[in-house]
Length: 123
Image (cartoon, rainbow, N blue to C red; front, top):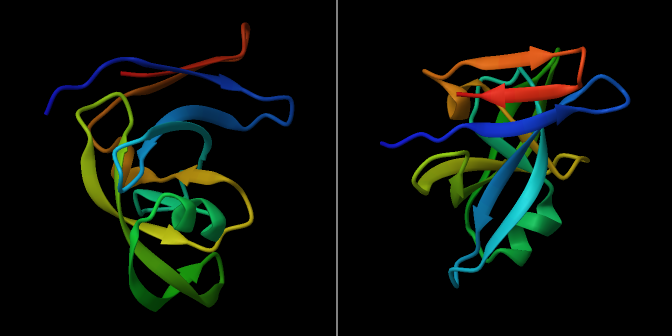
C-alpha cells in the first residue's frame, strides 16, 4: 500500500486533527477533520449521521469498551483514505464528534507534532 504524507494541525484545545477522506457508497469523496485518539485501538469512529449519509453498510451493533464503560455501537464497512490508497475498514458509529482516528488506521506510520507552529505530520 502506498502512503503519502498527511498534514494536520493542533487545534486551540490541543487536540491533534488530521484530514481523512471518507468515500460514500456512490464514490463521492468527502474530507473530514478527525481527532487523533491514541487510546482508541480501532481504525476510525464517526457519528451516525455521517455514516448513514455516506450510505455505508451497517453490520449491526456490538458491545465496545470505551474508556471504563461498555457501550453498544453500530459497526459499518466504510472506505477511507488517510494519505493512502482507499481501503475498506470496519468503522464504529455513534460518537458525538464528527470523526476519531485510532491506532489501527495509523499503524506502521510516524506521527510528528510541532507545538511551535501547531502542525501535525503523519508519514
